[in-house]
Length: 470
Image 1 (tube, one colour):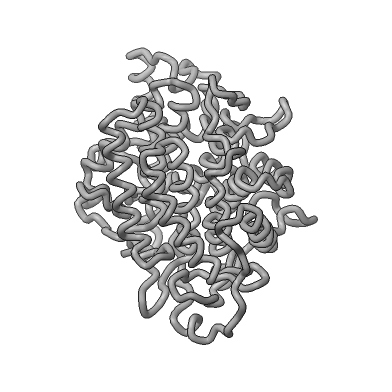
Image 2: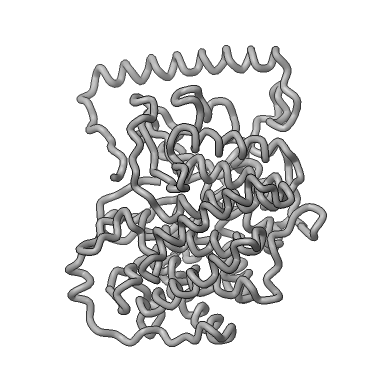
């Protein structure tokens, strides 16, 4: 994920014409479904991947950046799976299946397609994995037998991220933001990359009942809290630089960071049969998220959605939708916070609908009581998620499925890994000899890569230093 040039501003809000808001009764499931259908249609107006000459799965770009980032396509399909789950509208199911399968990437179906590998972040890959995980948990239509299956795709993403080369001892552990060491951001360890890995580990543990995933989730949580990316009050901060030993914490707080840890904690609460430890963590994260993001009624992206102007990037314009989706899902597997979450989500959804015009085109700011004209795929996803998630309590919306509770997706514990080597998957026993051999090979590869990197550096002018958003 990249933080691009800031978009919009107060002028956009002031110049937006007065329009009629989308008409929806939030106390009527039928009305919510009808309005959500309009919002979903408008969301798909940004997508061209089902048309000749366009690439399935990804979003083409809006100005000023020229394109949405690859990860945002993956996030959109997860939003549409939830839309189907909550409304039972199957209109976009085949399109969603095609898109999620097209972008899996050869040869190991781990959402690392060659066209995007050079600029890939752990969070980018992780968002596609989250959508695959949701498809498995929702019993979304399974791909043909000769195609990779949803659970296996999620396991492939998790396996590649659990590999030793993604975790180092700098800052005491944790994953870096970017994957290639030549990328700006490789020197940064952040909350979202590690949060997605934690979230997927918790969900895979519950789905498969394999405790290895849970132990990794615990290890990741402990590192995030220990390094200071999570405060004792459950504030989740953006990240820190490795050259500073992760002591320069960027304290920007984003909605999706709070939500990804909350949902993961809820799955761990469920997996541990309601343990006191995870109960307290779920309650702490819930209370903090409601307090800081919903204080004005509609959800606010507090670190970039300022009172006088908007300085949110293309990425940041999408985050509120994840907040709604993941908090709503939390209520199903950790009902202890249902009555804390749902009133906040309903007030926020009501505010979001006032930010949509009568045709279902939605803006970004939800606290002004009107449409602000700041439109885009992210803003549309936000509104769709906010509205459709209100249906989470409908009797037909089943809690996430798992092995033993009706799940149908097939898994592969060694998915995403090279199965020709001595290691047959991260969940298989690894010998001391395997570890030693892997360490030697890793050191040799890193030595060669670093030698090439420094040679290039000595022959090129120094690039501008990347800085985190703050």
